[in-house]
Image 1 (cartoon, one colour):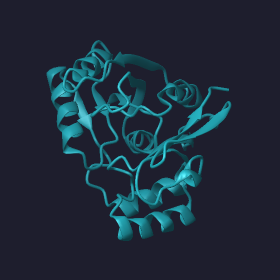
Image 2 (cartoon, helix red, strand yellow):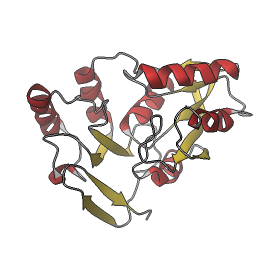
Image 3 (cartoon, rainbow, N blue to C red):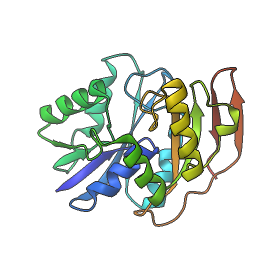
Image 4 (cartoon, rainbow, N blue to C red):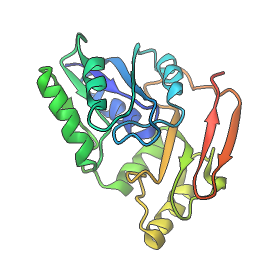
Length: 216
């Protein structure tokens, strides 16, 4: 099948593309840029970097903007997926029934099949596979145990061991499914080239923080 992929620039959408590409052809990327940082549906940290993501993997990108208003923001996704010459949509959902069900309903209304290759995968297995194949940088943290030092950190085996310990201590989700951290993928098997970063700035707000990244 020819697919569109919902992308944020993060690890889940990138790995979903990698897996889906084994059996299908990902023809288009779709990114929703929400003006609401607390959006229920959309990843917001460094969302502008989806343009660099698109250039790196040489797949065209469709950008839709959204007010991020709960439930109404789904209209923006539907608009972004409408009129695409594809048969289905690949998503990086792991455990969020809220997000999966809403995307599934939109796809159904447009006559598209939803492909969710990460759905209900074991988080530790998933993370081990991801760090073995992709270069993943943490760009946002918001959980106990994740301090400013994690901003800009590359996820590797050492970081994964620390996340496992934090999971036992604070019950944070190893894959960040609860919003504990957000990521930017700098390289992946389907990339033509590694993403280059422009200037970066750490902004720490006491119990959470973001690594703001400029395009090169």
